Length: 138
Image 1: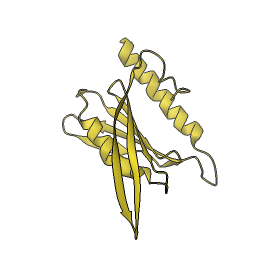
Image 2: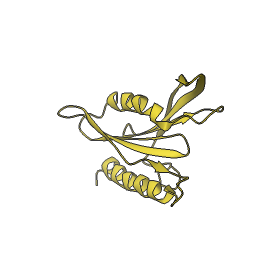
Image 3: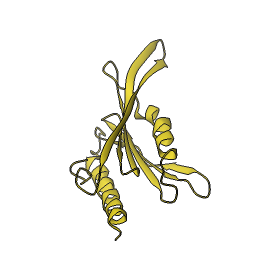
């Protein structure tokens, strides 16, 4: 987030309350939590974390969509990045005329062929530039 410019003005960060989760997988119960960071009610970063076993970031998608739907921003698209630290997925939500969302490709830091970190950073920088233009009225 720092490298993409989201930690600089005009952006303001706030955290949402963490949510404890338990997921049954085979005979195991995975315990973890979802943490969310919000930027200007336009971009949510939702992190699925667990100390015992890696949780799939897909478990954070419903919560990210709930945050996005609750946004006071009704006219412009909202975005989320859900991650577990290894896998990354972007979500776009358009609320008007009826709510529709779409998911990006699944990006990973540990693909055999290449590391998607630069692609993730490129997408974040693009969003940062668009949100800066909106916030400054350009």
